[in-house]
Length: 320
Image (cartoon, rainbow, N blue to C red; front, side, top):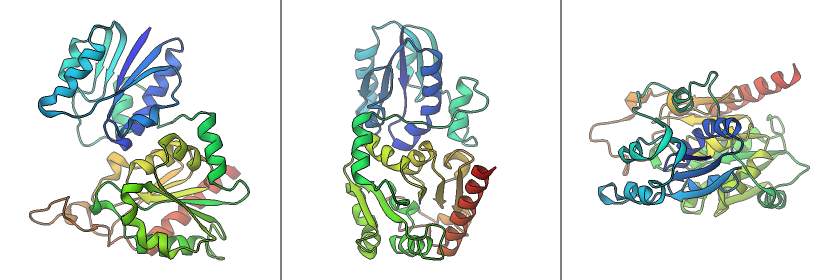
């Protein structure tokens, strides 16, 4: 039995789709899975059980990447094909049952949107997988006997990136003697290409407190590290959804993106958004590639209060 699962190019959307992948793994424990996704998201599935192949779909002109997928998969009999990108050619794949995401209504959270395809109630939140190598590597990167606050200060475009100096003030307050994470280490996460976004935060933290993981760690190792943290705060990003999948309290900072569609999923998660409403953030002739941060109306006080409220709520649930 073989199942083809076609998911996103972006890390965040790929993570959000893993809830239904997990359901399929449970439903078909003897099946062999092929995962097709973009090159950035592909490492997420390095340790996923029952996966026979991870096919990287590198976008090409005239949608030729779909032809490449046909060459790889179009002559295999599939028990199921689940296509979350609705590629027209996948309707031709030989399968007992095809499931396609026909359209996005822009009103439904991605977890619900994906879960609705398989009629899952309640919806299945994200989950990721690691192996022993990833876990052992994480053990060498983070202390085992101290609290660690995880921070995601970067994002894939500037507009939704809270300024590094705001993150610096926030984490210093959170880990101060009177803060909820008094004395905690601060682990910084992000890709090496995003390092410049976080420079003021990196330079501003005390060396004895900082754990600088902004670099080229593979995604399953990042996930293993996140599982060892007590709390995550960061921009709307794939990293935020990975923290959510790690089941740690996750606070997402939102501005020019909508939490109703992309907020971290679950009772252990919360969001704080800019004081300026979503639609008012975009001026005339808006260009997302040239814009500066659109997050300035989200104050440090707002983020701090959101973190404290979430931490207290999670602590209360654990104590029940």
